[in-house]
Image 1: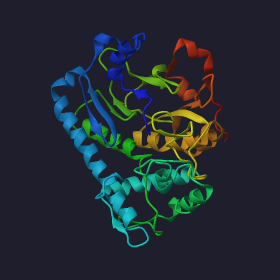
Image 2: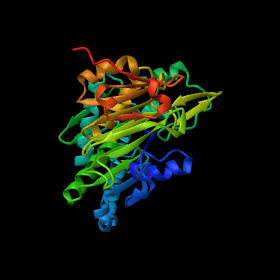
Image 3: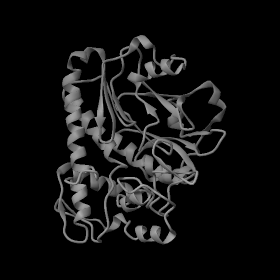
Image 4: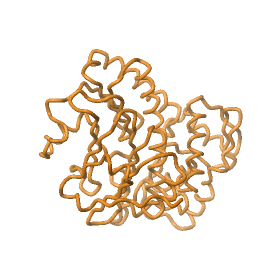
Length: 356
């Protein structure tokens, strides 16, 4: 998943640089912040002013969590448990660390919840389309090739036992990209809280969770990028302490073949890049759930979001369909915390509640 969310601590300076009115975050209210590259994206820790002397220590501990999880979970690292799981597919089971075991179990639960809109074994399809370390596309994969890869995609086949995992068919592989960053944010959130920090924001590639509040106003505010015009915003979200956001979009990572753009988010049911949605933002109590739901909701889009939300843990959602002029669809809970830019006020629509 790629960000169309901008962290609160850096939003003011970005808005000024882009020439956008900075009324959302006053430029004089910049807070202590540290950034680094982690888990294939940008990680930022922002703290309240009273923790400024501790930010380097906290940032180092947060970075340590991210680096450890990347080492365990990255399919790009040949020595990771995830890479070994693919290497041993059809041969033998692989022992997992506590975090890998927990995360794989969580991913399988979201796969079941989504009725296949997300699938942790989607890796062969992701690579087929030129993502996840796969070879660059020179043309659209044939229907036969897609069918062959689809035969390797079924998370119900994954065998978990005594903290080991086994993929029963050679060629199967796991991709935890739809949930790993959210999980990492939650682990970092717990670390900061246990260290006594109360006011902070953690942003890992658009997976965000906040605690407390910034000093200059009641709650943290997050800017939401326009998926059709990335330098600009469609509005801001007022985020109270403890809540988390995650976003999936079709504009950061994509391949282009013969003038046609294809998203990196693959529909495990069809083997094709998901279509119909430009961006989805999920708001809920923890970053793991937000991350786990955002990809599924991107795949099912407006038509399927009501059914999925009915079964999912409590969450609110913002969906931007992939069409123009822009429409912004919100659940009622999301509408309570979202402030659209004036130009888009008339484009905001309220999603009907899920049928009971």
